[in-house]
Length: 151
Image (cartoon, rainbow, N blue to C red; front, side, top):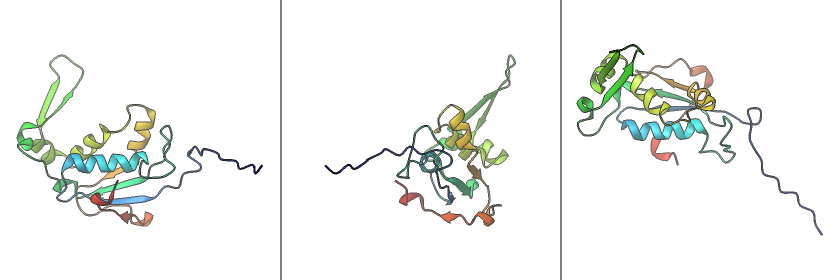
């Protein structure tokens, strides 16, 4: 009898080949953009996806200041943070947050879609968000990807 050895391959940090992906957020809806970015950061678009390992790629998001929100979310959507002291709750609308820090909305949306553990923190460090069209990662030669082609 022919002895074929079929082994399930479990990826780890050393065996994963990471690429740099460039995504243009201009005109994209925030939630749909964030799900696509989180999908790539987790590595779910790869055949060697392993849930417990960092198998995803590095993602650069440019033009984060030109994202879109549907409906009345620019005024109705609230971002809440707390200082930890009594009465220390701070509430900002999406429009105020965009004016203050344009990259924060994309970062918060993607972070909320990653695992809430050490792996999620490690994956979040692979995300680089920029408000304009310029970024500091030309040396990595990122490949531009359209959101519609993911999944």
